[in-house]
Length: 406
Ligand SMILES: NC(=O)c1ccc[n+]([C@@H]2O[C@H](COP(=O)([O-])OP(=O)(O)OC[C@H]3O[C@@H](n4cnc5c(N)ncnc54)[C@H](O)[C@@H]3O)[C@@H](O)[C@H]2O)c1
Ligand SMILES: CC(C)[C@H](C(=O)O)[C@@H](O)C(=O)O
Ligand SMILES: [Mg+2]
Image 1 (cartoon, rainbow, N blue to C red):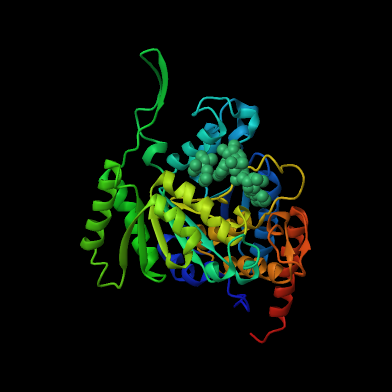
Image 2 (cartoon, rainbow, N blue to C red):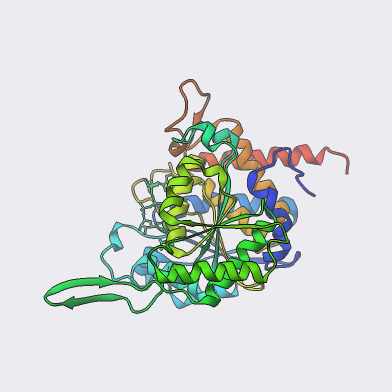
């Protein structure tokens, strides 16, 4: 059975055709999903995503097996380590990893590798999830919700392709030192040609399913690592004959890109960039969609290996435990997991349709209420209630479909 959506959620338009390219599992059989709720709002939004997956799995006859594991601050408290061996081993064995968020004030003074963020980075590296796909798609329902002007952001649909297991996050040497009586901290931003080539090729493939426009973002006016990045991307583009496939490649400095994301975001289709620039630009792109809480992501590895599906935002300790977090970025990450990780595009369609539906009915978590125009008929709901509305929407759609002639 398929939803054949009445609503076409933006993410679906391009990804449908891609399911076979990046997907890990073939259809059929039980799917093992490692769930990592983590810290802060993590458990609240994970709860919503798992309930949504359960009902959609049941409706589509897909047997999902969830197994929860510790990561981040939660794992530090339980085991003393932000990524216990048991968690990494279970993730490697799974068909897909669904992660909510890690981090919090309590663990902020630990060393880089011992803090929650270190656990997340070790997980990404441990699974070699080198390609982080971060779609920033504005749905018409949220047009008035962004602090940016509607005529600037209407129809924006960007895919940020971020290299995830290299660059300054992982470069050596790194650390602290004393230099002539002064204290210094240092990191190394390094990319090998092979690392740039493999992420560039993911961006090319994705661009073929979209409008075909790639902007590679770097800081080649200052950094050697970016000069190598730029040349390597251009060479791979040429070698792969991308022009004859109708693709266009342009380069942009990261500072300019940050500005253009606010002033003229519609020009972007695929943004290809390195680890730290992609981190910063994706949070910025989220403003177009109304809230950081809306953005999903998929971190994929080579075919046959599990990917990590997680929202772009963090553990939001400022709102944790209040049942007010927006679960939609998490839920849309679950949809990306269905599409890319489980090869179940119809499950993804159903989830994305439900998100679209609740937004169309005017339901919003607090983060999406801020810039609403006066008089807008919006109904503020909490995290749990948003989850219930999604379940209701899915159930209603299933009932409608069951009455349709086969
Ligand atoms: N992938 C991850 O797990 C991840 C990502 C980013 C930050 N972090 C960690 O999260 C912690 C907090 O970092 P931060 O405050 O800079 O970033 P954050 O993304 O957690 O929060 C930034 C702001 O956005 C709001 N926000 C985020 N997600 C929301 C949601 N779903 N619904 C409503 N509002 C939401 C927060 O309330 C906060 O005001 C830090 O420890 C950081 O390292 C983790
Ligand atoms: C928590 C942190 C390590 C992480 C990153 O910088 O990649 C986060 O900001 C993200 O965007 O996923
Ligand atoms: Mg980030």
